[in-house]
Length: 204
Image (cartoon, rainbow, N blue to C red; front, side, top):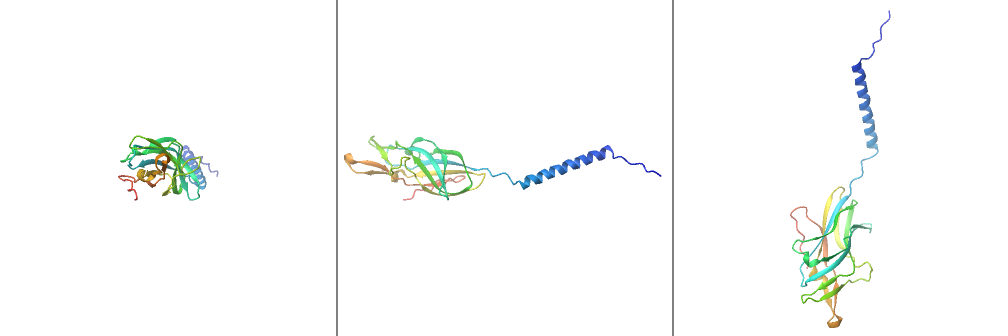
């Protein structure tokens, strides 16, 4: 006696196709996992400059660039403002933006520095203007290295502040025709509090 072969119905073929598609997706997913997760996005960093009052009409700095220094001694450029900034306008919570959302690889950064260009000056209370000398012979100007300890995590945003004490940073030497004004920076760099924070008071 011969038995008739039963052909699979249409519903069975559709179910089989669905199972094969699901298996293919699972295989592709497993291969993607073996390839590793995508690399983390870099941290974005913004840097602001602020100052404190001093007995001058103006204290002008030519800020060429701002950089962050890592443990290996390398420097990462965060911004190139190349701007002349009057520090006496940066008081009472007013800041100048030096770097806006710059990408910074994850890591530990201990230093922040400003590269200053030529043309810095001080205007005294009597209205006279004097060149503000930089205590360095480097052609690239003065590097302000301020202690900064910020562990940068992937995919985060950080707000950093450079705070200069104007009264302590601008010095006069000599008298009469030998008078000269020199920038001897006193300040700090710190991370701005996320909400409701304020910069720490200047150290004496």
